[in-house]
Amino acid sequence: IAGITQAPTSQILAAGRRMTLRCTQDMRHNAMYWYRQDLGLGLRLIHYSNTAGTTGKGEVPDGYSVSRANTDDFPLTLASAVPSQTSVYFCASRPQASSYNEQFFGPGTRLTVL
Amino acid sequence: GENVEQHPSTLSVQEGDSAVIKCTYSDSASNYFPWYKQELGKRPQLIIDIRSNVGEKKDQRIAVTLNKTAKHFSLHITETQPEDSAVYFCAASRGGGYNKLIFGAGTRLAVHP
Image 1 (cartoon, one colour):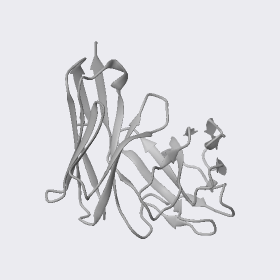
Image 2 (spheres, helix red, strand yellow; image 1 turned 120 degrees about the vertical axis):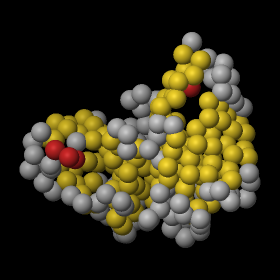
Image 3 (tube, chains in turn green, yellow; image 1 turned 135 degrees about the vertical axis):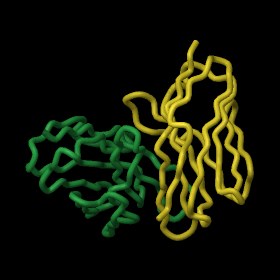
């Protein structure tokens, strides 16, 4: 059982390019999340999905989009990357968005935008 | 909006000492408070959590206390060991309905042998 995986592990990207970060979980979790982690700022929520077919904006959604076509996958797209999007990106999932249960994180993607 | 403040940002202790990390939250409807540990280069992982119907929870060397009146909760690590060195994040969320975790900025704990 893989749990929750992310790809790529790391990426260097030219500003202005489009990039999709992939996230897949095999735990049949309903809720999925994307965070960015910057030094001193903790984990900030970008977008979330409470269940397949629905998405919502977190605290820092600008410049990012997501889709949730099925339960397992939750890709994050940067339409036109900018240097301020250099960060470590974590995908996470939890069984339900509406109960007290553990949120599991993926291994992260380190993105550098030049 | 909802906010979680975490202090201190860095903490250095000698092996065997205790470490305490404190968080305050702004949303009085919050009732679920997990703590995550993130080792260098790794993903955050849940180490303990508490719901608002209890004031304290222990798991071996770690404990969490909650004061709902003051809207703060704390992580206590006793008999610290070098492997406790990591970044610790507190978080808070509402229960019921769809809820999201709001994270503190993290505390970097260094345990020196």
